[in-house]
Image 1 (tube, one colour):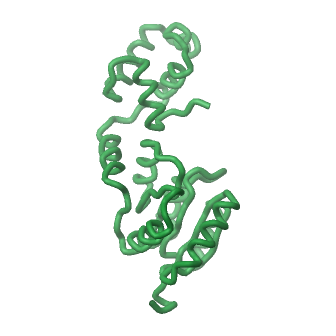
Image 2 (tube, one colour; image 1 turned 60 degrees about the horizontal axis):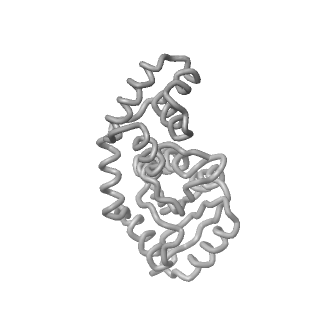
Image 3 (spheres, one colour; image 1 turned 90 degrees about the horizontal axis):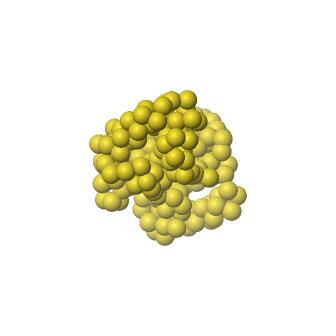
Length: 210
């Protein structure tokens, strides 16, 4: 493979150790040319706008601009560049958001170097790199109607252990309204009760409880 035919890769991750580890790993792949290693989404987008980048390897959880937002802006600013998410997490909601934002694949940071190299090649060729299990979860998430902001707030309060009465007081609504909201939530999540709704929401990454 000649220099002009190498896959031009840009890495963006806000953890210095991860950046250097990826830089070292990529240097072993003759078919990949490392354009730059960036520490923020903003920097990565500036680079992608200035010079050709074929594939961008993007950390999911960065601050202030996360991986999903980088993907969204990448589609606008450098649509020819393929985005690959690299993460230590596999929460359903984050996988879904990355897919909807245009990610060509979702890779674990624990993936073997050969798998990462092959995934970069496949992404460059226009292929999707999501496991069959991930695609099933994405399809399930697509089929589920979106929860409203109010319903998400109620779910978070349920997960924190608040009663219906306490949720009503905190929200400024009646307990009857809270019960209706919980009924709607249970229907959308295909669960039987408030406890299961909170559990499923946490497991799938729909809500986070710090």
